[in-house]
Amino acid sequence: MTYSRKSIFLLFVGDVAAFICSLWLTLLIRYRDIPTETLLLAHLPSFGVLFVLWVIVFYMAGLYSKQIILFKSRLWDTILRVQLLNIVIAALFFFLIPGIGIAPKTNLILYLFVSLLLIFVWRIYFFPRMTKPAARTRAAIIGTGPELWELVEEVNANPRYHLAFPVVEEPAALLEDFALFAQKLSEERVTMLVVDTTNDSLRPLLGQIYDLTYVTHQYQFADFYDIYEEVFDRVPLSLLEYDWFLKNVSGAGTAFYEIGKRIIDIVGGLVMGAVAVIAIPFVWLALSLEGSGPLFIGQDRIGLHGAPMRVYKFRSMRFNDNGKWKGEGQENYVTRVGAVLRQTSLDEFPQFLSILRGDLSLIGPRNDIRALGDRLADAIPYYGIRYAVKPGITGWAQINQQYEPGNISPQSIEETKMRLAYDFYYIKNRSLALDIVIALKTVKRMLFRVSSW
Image (cartoon, rainbow, N blue to C red; front, side, top):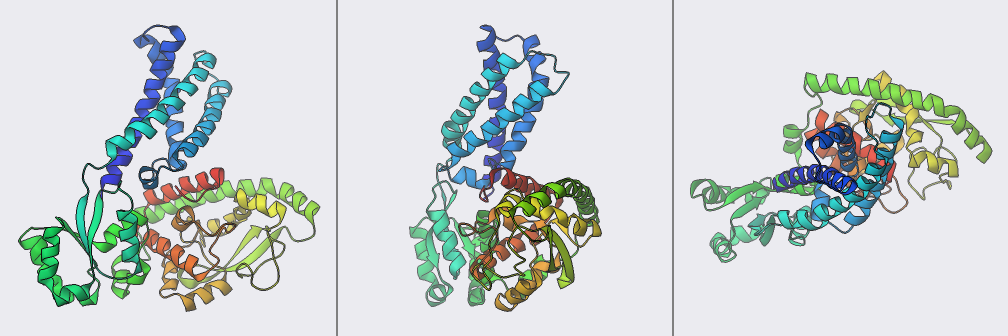
């Protein structure tokens, strides 16, 4: 399934090529002659900085995600919105930053139109044709459970995956007649076996599966967990057992990771603190004009290893909900000022105090209010393990999960289970690189207010 990484790299190279070609075409149109090397070199340094900024914006907007490769329904709208933002960035760059030694006004306007056209042509027409698989690997998947069928339906319904599942078998059927299963593999021209090796029912058959894959080399082998995680970017909760946590969950990272993460937290906390201090008089004035109530609210939340901690936020609701879900207890609602604070995530910024103290990180599983967290721990198996690492203000779940319309956090057990699946994926795969991805996509959410891509 590594095709996605190759496709994303190709997408990146194509974007850079489109930016460079756009500059060449802009100069051709502007001066009505083949651009000379001197002319190109005069423009390339300034436009090169612009290329870098644009690629970063593309990344933040999700234009290098797996979903953008597999699904095109929102591609036109996403590219258009991103390019409009890039136009603003380009205008600010060329007109406000001193020291640019070219006269870019006419060239910039031409360039923006040309680059928009080329990006659309590259991403809408050429890239899909270059990356669509000529043939899909035909695989048999062996296991049971809702996540297995979720994977089968997702992959089989989308021809842009390089994998298809013409054969789906439960362990009971193989135990009853393994020869019939082998015959079915031949008839369906299967070349790969995807197996849930944690399923106890399959243990008597693991020897035969081993012979087919590693002794006779008739089939490739892939673990169900690996395929599921690569497709959905989360772990399959219903298949988790104690051994998964023993293998994949460790409270301590490498020294390099822990030191680097702490440095990022301190720098980020100081920036958040500066923004929060500047915002205080404006938020206070807006909340005072809207009605009575405190400027800040304090919440008792769950910290590392379940330790108690207290965080402070700008008040965004009529009163402190104390960890209740929508529709529970006294009627509560987000105020008009609070809606703006939440849309900009400004309500979270006073938590810089907890970050600087070391109780909280910028990136990590988002922690619960104590009362709600205790309820969830009673209702969901293994829930407390998400606190094996330091919680964060934003995390992998917050940039990937989509909630019910109008919700900005889980409001049911099922939504919380989905969040937990993303949290476990983060705990298993956490690194500075993944933290940077989450940070950039969090900024994207603040700018575009979308949780997908």
